[in-house]
Length: 311
Image (cartoon, rainbow, N blue to C red; front, side, top):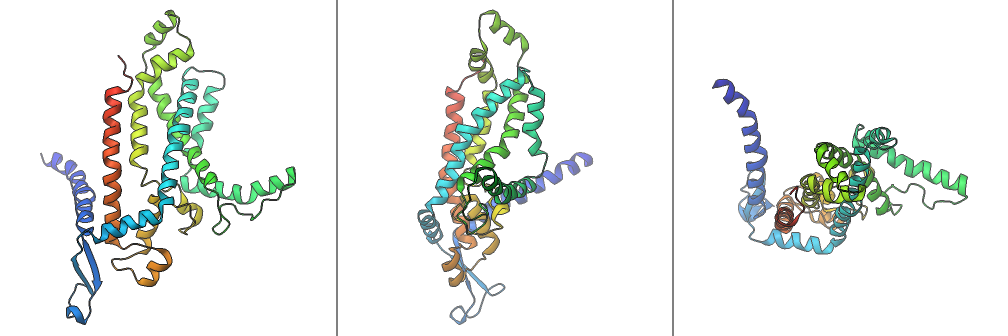
């Protein structure tokens, strides 16, 4: 019993702190406001800060931020769409190719997954160096074209969203292929042989046999991508060292703001960077949760009800 208690103690404590307490405190903070202690409140406060009930004031500020910076929502949404339309379908096709053990399938499997062995931060820095230094040199030396504003992933040179989007598709491709190919390898070989005896070709095998039998894995990736619409940072911090570029996703903006803000944001800082305070960020997080949570659960329910099944 003592061993069982000790083994279970750590995950229970972790759940209580990082799930229950953090979320409860975030909800509570979203309805609070903080001000510096002054003569008007008799200089009373903890560490010079006075806390009071804010009602829905923080939510109004958070909603106004979403309206003013609607491009962040668009950037986040385009990343999700690219995952659904490009990454997952291509990963399914490549995974099917690998599972059929076609020519060079083992070589492609290693090459596709190799970038995931390296830390994403290191891979992002290497990619940044290639885009900033190697690509302009190749274009100039081989094709006689000068890339204006060398340093395409440098703050102040109008960095391209397409380049950042391409990197995120590329870096996530290997994991998708690995998971899908693993799920496909678990399909009973007798089912495949039976379909071939009935005259099914490779396209029919993929569509009517393979896809339904691994759809639970595919739907899980789609649900995770949908749940991460407002949290994915697209490796922007690695590329731009925490600077505002106009390419921000909501996840990157929340992370960046949380790094540089406080309970009370000075007017100068708020005007220059449009940073929200901790309570306003908490309200923004609740707003985004209220938007994406019902959509995620509804999508999951629709997949379970109308998605292809093994039957």
